[in-house]
Length: 208
Image 1 (tube, rainbow, N blue to C red):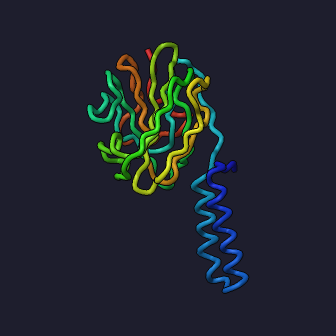
Image 2 (image 1 turned 60 degrees about the vertical axis):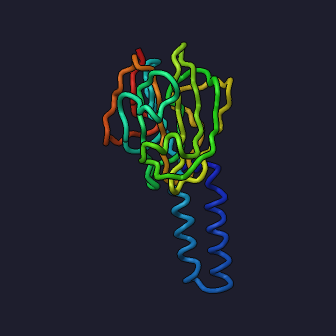
Image 3 (image 1 turned 180 degrees about the horizontal axis):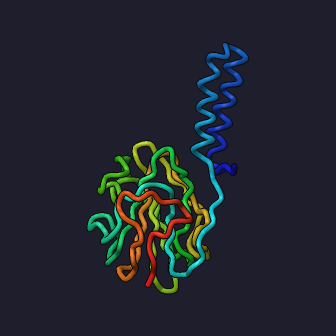
C-alpha cells in the first residue's frame, strides 16, 4: 500500500520511540507507540483509484460523507452563482485529495483561520483552508480544502498554471476535515446528502 510522504515522519517517529522505549524501559511502553505507528500508516494510506473518463464528469476530491449537495450556501461559496458539494472526512477515511475535473489551475489561494468542527456551515469561511481554481474549457470549478478540529494543516501540492487531470492527487489534509467543490449552476449534481463517496472515482456532478 502506498503511503503519502507527509505521513512518513509520523510513522517513523512513533516506531522510533517504540524502539527506544522497548530497549530502554520495557515492551509495555513500546506497545502503544507501535499502535500509534500503525494508526498513522492507516491514516496516511494512499490507495490507487481508477477514475471514469468523461470530460463532463466532476469527481469527488475526497473520500467521505456528503454534507451539502445542491445550491451553494450563501455564506460559504465564492462570489457568484454556484452549486456546492461538501464532503466530511472522518479520521478513518482516506485523506489524500484528488483533482475533481481536468483543466488548468488558474489560482491557488491559502487562507489562515480557525479550527471549528468541519461539519459546521461556518467552517467553510472561518477555518484555515486552501482553494484550487480550475478552468475546465471555460467553466470554473473550485476545490476547497478545509481543516477541522483535528485537521490542523492542509497540504496543497498544485500551483497556478499547472495542467491537471481529473483524479490526480494534489494534496492531503491531516486528520478529520472537509472538502468543498463548487461548480457552475448549469451542472447537474449526481450525489445526495448522506451518501458516501470515494475520491477520484465517484461522480459528484456532470457539467453542461
